[in-house]
Length: 66
Length: 174
Image (cartoon, rainbow over all chains, first blue to last red; front, side, top):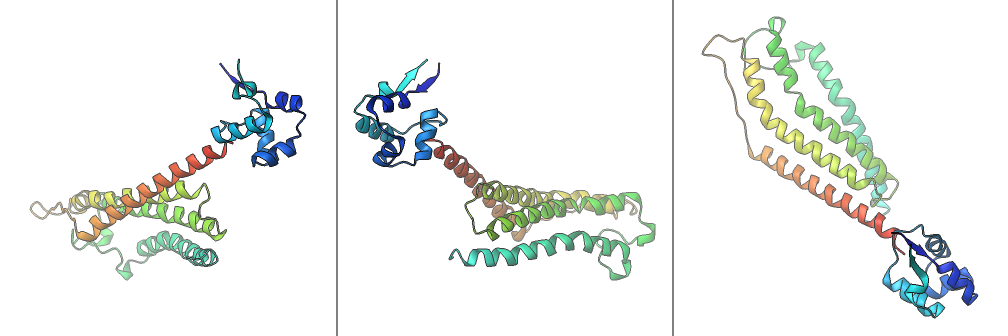
């Protein structure tokens, strides 16, 4: 089983730009890009909570097990 | 230590390590090629003149070089570590494995220094008449201190390598 990051989908739904979201949650655009492409080993609960707060969604809206 | 002093000290130590690396084999070759210097004194083991040394004496001589070989490898790792510190980055990922390499080579050298004495003395005195052959065992406080310090260096290098690995892994978490 694999975990897929659906952050780009949620950002498109909320019409949020990468630069704005990165600034809001306090990470670099480069790291946000890595997160969107799933090229990271993991995501901290703290970062996940900030993204959920910024996009007004649940962790399950951002991550999907396939 | 301030960060500006680190490269300066590392530069001096780097130069010193290169000199040491060159001196080890140079001194041995000098001792071999110029017997008059008396650098290869084995009178503790045998009185046979150098021209008449049997093969076992020569083997004993080279067995005695085993700790020096590991010491040379440790100095070479030091040279690479100092070159790294010259750049002013003491926490570079390569530093931990290099310290571990220095520690392990020094540790092996220290243990070998203890282990080769009986072998070397046995080989070198093998050509002596019966009753004059010997096997020596030598252990003193400086050798024990060397074993402890090299062991400590090995553990520090090990933990630094582990810390570097964890730091690299942590970087992959966002």
